[in-house]
Image 1: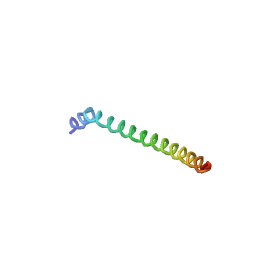
Image 2 (image 1 turned 90 degrees about the horizontal axis):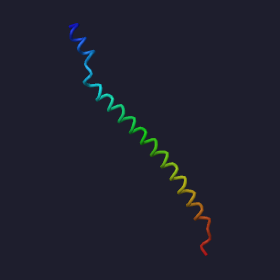
Image 3 (image 1 turned 30 degrees about the horizontal axis):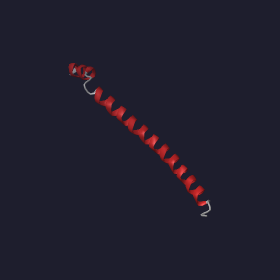
Image 4 (image 1 turned 30 degrees about the vertical axis):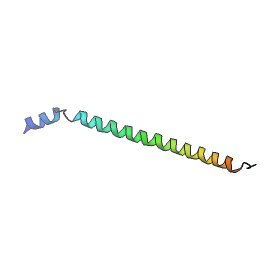
Length: 59
């Protein structure tokens, strides 16, 4: 039983998978944060353009 625990502790086969999952999750979260920031900025700019066009005279 002690040999099994020692082998289990020294086994690093799944470490790459864990690293990959953590890095992928970080990239997804960063992408969502950037997307939200760009979306908010684009919405604000679109509202400013709409206001400017609404205040213009037609003739």
